[in-house]
Length: 167
Image (cartoon, rainbow, N blue to C red; front, side, top):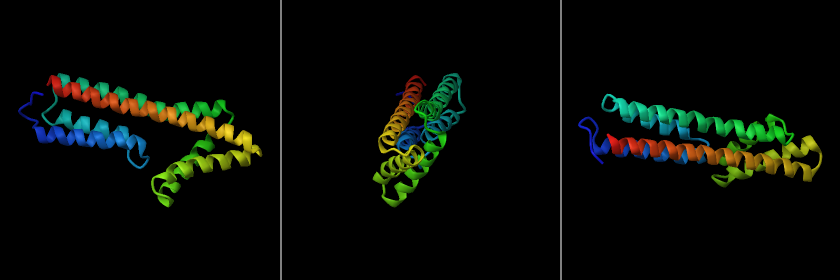
């Protein structure tokens, strides 16, 4: 890795650390994962005044940010709609996940989210089997959205790492 005169190894490592926190933030709902990765990339670009390669890296990271964020929200909403559940099911599940995270640290995230989605669907449908099918479809869609967002985060970090190697 060549170093530019304006950006030292310590600064590059700090940017990498913030990006790593951002990648973890994709999985932890209290951290703005993709936004942290992108912001660290912006700091890297501005660290020495930019340059064509660095600005190109940031543009690519921005495209990945938008694609990852869209996948996180659009895919689950579409799958929930296709399964016949209202969008409010996703919203209630997200609230349940956050509350669960604070009530039962870490595992409460899953328990709260799944439990509240199931209860909401059970109330709406009046049948446990149908409610579980709808809950499963919702969870699958949210999981796929999260995986796509995680892939976008990794792609952003890889884009930045290639930019570091080139500059």
